[in-house]
Length: 464
Image 1 (tube, rainbow, N blue to C red):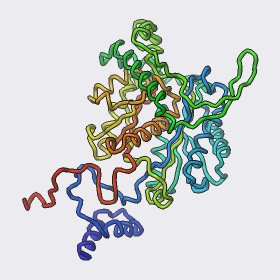
Image 2: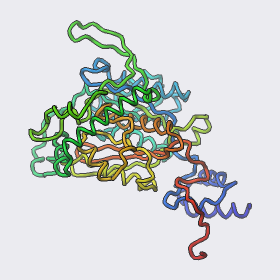
Image 3: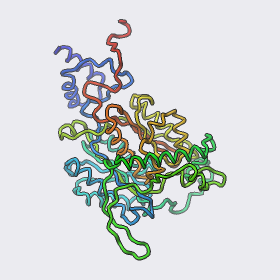
Image 4: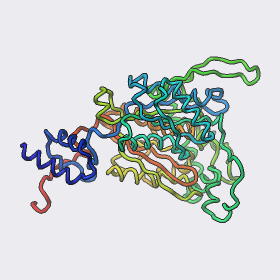
């Protein structure tokens, strides 16, 4: 047995030349009692030692509220972010000083101002001055990009523990172009299309791919129905951190102390007949309305990631494993198709197939693009946005990715063994898409890969 183990160690060393000597020591320990796993899926092979997996041990969000008239209309952005950052530490007992970096996805606020607000929020949450903070902006995928950036940094060995977060106050920072536009844009069609209103890109998707008004309205109704059911059954309580704040009466100026813990944009009684009465917003004869578009919202979310070995050492339960991430580019005029391109890329990168995915969180920027992506990828509707999506819950641009991570992983945990893999994806303004694959935290061990096979073919094909 000892000779077999030594042969395996030497073989792995030759196959993995990029490993350091310390990693090779981990390999040796990981195979000391090893059983041949050649029968596991050839499509999915570990690319690192088991203990080096990047895992998520906590993921939380605020409620999402309607901008300018919802529960957070009088809440400063840093007071949205601080509670979710603090919750990660309070609920895991991780020392704040151990966090290597806090990366916050955010879109609309001026860069230097928002960076300062995020640093302030970290102090409010109890992090010491030694913990750095930065922001990242890939438009609507910024919250997911922050999680991917932290996962990549942990994988690269920059640090062992990090936080990927997202923040947006569309009350404080409405969507607007600041300053003049370069006249050169008129010389290139693709550059011009980067300036198209998002609603026009939605109309382009609906027109080009034949997504009807009825399909869009029905998707919106389903989003509200599922979100209302999830709220009523208490599903969101595991992921929402209550925020103590204030509401100011616009007429009298009187302040009222409140605690916000429920998404306030969900309409349980939404119906196709009601939505059919709404007029198109972006095009006179169009099909995109306020009812079948994502809501303009305020909110924040945060995700605590670390090396699996560190999580095990600390005795922390593993909520999920970060498996892959992909960002892609598409035609800016139909930017909403992004998930239809990004999802296959991320799934392939994880060594999986679409049929292996048990749950999808696809951001509902517009019903037109959501319906198109669902149909294009031939996804089972029962697997997608099972607790509603952005048309009901809301879409605070920079926070959406982090919100989706919290929603997906908590739902996967509830479903247990019947749910192993989940995907998060969204379209991105100016023509991009992003997607990430997650695995439920308790579904693999040191000796098993992802997809088990019914038969084990240990012999080479030449020996059969």
